[in-house]
Image (cartoon, rainbow, N blue to C red; front, side):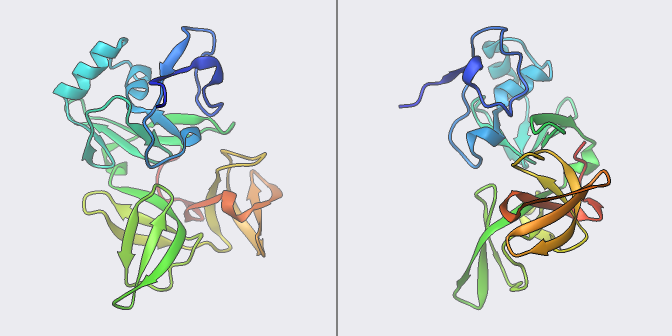
Amino acid sequence: MSKGHLKKIVSPRTWLLPRKQNMFVIRPLPGSHPLEFSLPLGLLLKEKDFGSTAREIKKIINTKTVLVDNRRVKNPKYGVGLLDVVCVKETKDYFRITLDAKGRLKILTIAESDTKVKPCRVNNKTAIKGNKVQLNLFDSRNIISDDKEIKTGDSVLIDLSSNKISGVLKFEKGAFVILTGGHHMGGLGVIKDIIGSTVVVESDGVKFNTEKHLVFVVGKNKEAVKLR
C-alpha cells in the first residue's frame, strides 16, 4: 500500500516547491497522469491560498463546487495533471496545469473563456467494429471517432462540456508544440521538420532536434489555449 504523503525532498522535480519548508506533502492518488506530471488537488488549492491546512482544504472541496475537466472532485488527493482545467465555481477562479520554461509544473490562472477545451495528444489508436477508431489519449481518456485521418502524435481538442472532439491539431510542419521531456522540457516552439522519429523544433530563433514522443502539439502556428 502506498503512503498518503511524500517527503518534499524526494517529490518530483517538476513540482515547484520549497524543499526546506515542512517535511511532507500530499501524494496524489494514482490516476490519469504519471506522478511526474500530476499535482494533488489539495496542494493546488493551498498554493492558490484557498486554505493553509488539510482541514481547510477539505472544507473548501466539500462546500464549494471544484471541477477538474468539468467533473466534480471532492478528494484532495485527486491528481490534477498536465493541461487539466480546474474551476472553483463559487469564487470564479480558473486554472490550467502547464509547464514553465524550466520544465516544472505551473498553476496558470486563466479566463473562464479558456476553460472550454483541452488539447489531448493521441498516444495510440485502434480500429474497432463499425468502421470506427478508438483514440487512446495522453490523459488515459478513450474516445471513439469516425475520423480515420487522426494519427498517433496528433492532438485533439476536447470540448469539456460534452467530452467530444471539437478539432484536430495535426503533427506536421508548422505545428505549435510544447516539449514534455528532454533538455528542452517545458519549451514552446514550432515544428520545422520531421525525420523519422526525430523532430526539428524552432524555439526563440534556435533550432534543435528532439524525439517524437516528447513533442505535444498544442496549436497551429500558435497555442490553441493559454500556456504561459
